[in-house]
Image (cartoon, rainbow, N blue to C red; front, side, top):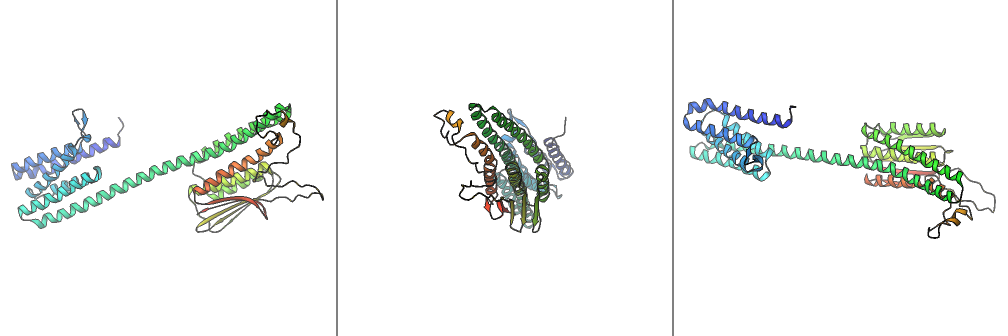
Length: 409
């Protein structure tokens, strides 16, 4: 049978009882029958208080027996302390107070401590040696406070451990939610486009949409596997993680991705580093997927109170002939739809009850797919930043389109 902590605890309690009986036996035999009787009663009380027993089919821990036995052992230890010269009864008295403070609720443990102090003061008044018992009473009070403080500290550590487990579960759930929501929403858009194209008998374009949906499902599954594997391992330092993302970006689209790190580098909380890494990954994914011909720049700035992250992709200038209507240009992270073709045949074939049929031809489905990655992803990143007490913004500026994350360091 494997040795468990419960079995070890029982063996230790039994050893304490045996040692108390053996340490007091010789003195009790010398002192006479009163000491022998009190020693036997002390050993019995300790056995009832510390050892698990069955009483009428119930565990003794579920009955008042251990508390009563502990109180009796405290009083008997005070009596033996007055009758015998050795220090065993005093040690038993302190052990009873420690056991009460560590195992019983505060009202019960406080009652045991007060019983011990009152018994010492009464015994000292009867024997006329109040000073000797007063010192032991002070020691008993001090031991009780130390034991109860240790118990409270242990309870706080256990509560913090439970909170850490719950926080880790929430982090894993949030990671998987972000990955699956991003992948599945994009697949739904492609499949909706394929349905509309099939109604218009544009089978080649519909097949292309189905193929893209399959690729998204495959990439989403791989990303989910990577996320689970990363959650099981110790994450790399933030600069290392960003360098890996930049190298992956360059190897995929063969365009530069420049990483600038400024300020005093230091480790952040795991949640903060994960938020910075996921935001960078989301922004680079949008650039790689929707604007593969543009480079990217990652700027990470450390300070003593905040950490700033900026992912920028330059917006190429668009020239249009005079007196022509230039379509509005937006970055892939912003997720703008393409210009919609007029007289879409699919819109004519959609059922009358399908709201917005004329406003959403299949080309807009593709454009919506372009926006789905940045839209849902940036919303999830913004929520993650707010949970950490930070902010996330995304929009065009003089340098292009920038995703800016700012969180406490």
